[in-house]
Amino acid sequence: MGIEDDDIAKVRAAADIVQIVNGYTTLKRVGRRWQGLCPFHTEKSASFSVNSEDGLYYCFGCQKSGDVITFVREKEQLDFVGAVEWLANKYSITLRYTERGEDEGRKRRTKLVDAVRKAVEWYHTRLLESADAGEARKYLRARGFDGDAVRRYKMGWAPDDAKQWDPLCRYLKLNDEDLRASGLGAINSRGRQYDFFRGRVLFPIFDDRGDPIGFGGRILPGHDGPKYKNTSDDAAIYSKSKILYGLNWAKEHIVQAGEAIVCEGYTDVIGFATAGVPRAVATCGTALTEDHIRLLKRFSPRIVLAFDADAAGQNAAARVYEWEQKLDVEFSVADLPNGVDPGELALTDPARLAAAITNAKPFLGFRVERVLSSGNLRTPEGRARTAQTAVDVVREHPSDLVRDQYLMTIADRCHLDPDHVRAAARGAARVAPGRVTNQPEPRGAMMPVDHAPRRRPMRENAEDEALRLLVHRRTEIIDRLEPVLFDSDARRDAYEALVSATDLHRAIAEASPDTAALLTRLAVDEPDGDPDQAIVDLSRYATSRVLDQLRREAASVREPEDLRAYSDVIDWLRHRLAELDDAEKRMSAAALLVAWLAENAEGPAGE
Ligand SMILES: [Zn+2]
Image 1 (cartoon, helix red, strand yellow):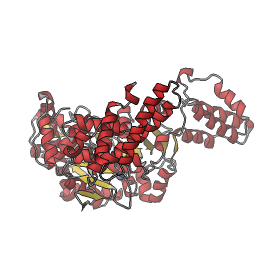
Image 2 (cartoon, helix red, strand yellow):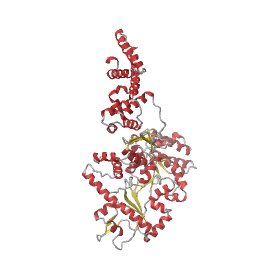
Image 3 (cartoon, rainbow, N blue to C red):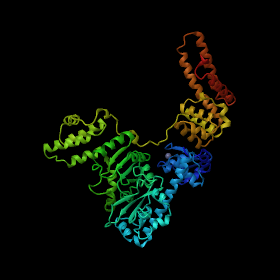
Image 4 (spheres, rainbow, N blue to C red):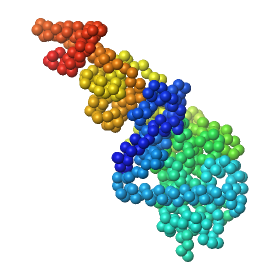
């Protein structure tokens, strides 16, 4: 994965899971565990539990589980390497990478990010303090950005000071190659370094981890030059087709709301946040790409477009449907007033801006509504023409179930027979039959998850108790358990994983996701059970199960000799079962039963 195993182990050992989790919720000590309100779902009573010795957490409400690295991955929305780096940074551990090239690449990236970070601070201070930034400050105030917003978004001012050597370049002291690679500057015809963003108000762009990687620069009104200038794609750490402005601030809110908003400008992102909708991001001077959608999908499968999606045209629509199918995301369109961008609306009517998101319409619904509301529905000819235009829009959608519902809406609004509209949709169809699919909608995955704890049957509780003991007090019980004592597949898998691995972490790492989650849950439980009682309970359930099976088989046996064999076994098991309730005999009976069950798991005397 890139980082040396030893270093990952070092990070794991150094990281204090209680300290890390306490950054997101408050844990209280309960017995040998720590408990608190779950940082992953909303709840009133604490169902989040942490085992600090083994470094594991489990939520009895939403079933989230894992170790300190998983926790950081989930909360900070990082990949594995990113989470290890985040922790290593916190605990001052130097990481080594498995491939030298990768190591070099990361070093280089760190160097360039550091340069951009220094530039962010330099421009920002310049905007706040410098006399030559007066016009920039005035411009930002007029756009509704107060000092708080300027500081929060680290806005900056790149002075237009070319008389001498550029002040930024003089401050950074980068060599030409690094200056170019950082995207901060270039070399003029006289071989002089110059600041790429001269004379612009700057919006620093951070990647989703919060590393500064570039800028969007806005020219001041009345000055020459393009309105916006962004960091060039030639810069080594910046790629506009993969970057979304604001994701570093919005990601947590996107996950919470299960919804991301995509708009077109830096000021729109900030406008949404000030209107109380802090989950907007913007593309940086480019149309939405598949990479953008893949990035957003890591945080939420629902995406609201807060720009004029219709103006983007038919190609955009085709891409949206393709992404919906291929990437399993769902697009809708914000209900914005015509011709007003979100940044402006945030200033004049923030409540209306928030409502635009609440009232977002499915992508196709939005487009059909556009056609219907702009058509002339007063004459038969007008209605027919409008219906045909709307049908053409509907025909682009790949699902016939979805298409048919909109066709009925069109029929209704244009006062036409639904069958005629359907016929019009079939006629001269532009959609190839191969693309037409029958996906059931809406998708079940969008439904809220029911967090109510399920009641487990007694037998499963007994199996859990035995596993819990195996996790916490391994030596007291491991020699007395057998796979046959576990009726549930999941629990038998967990048992096998625990027995074959040398320790809990290895068992979790090597198990399937379900089994790993079960093991983690058991690890955060209080190990207060009694091994003797666990063995007695398990052998009672397993024996009862086998007895039921033997009785069913015996009912269809014809040969007297076979029948006797069955009844001997059944009698023997019944006696041992009865002894399980006898305080004197229960442990020897349990031991006999476990041994018998291990030998004869499949049936009587292995016949
Ligand atoms: Zn939870």
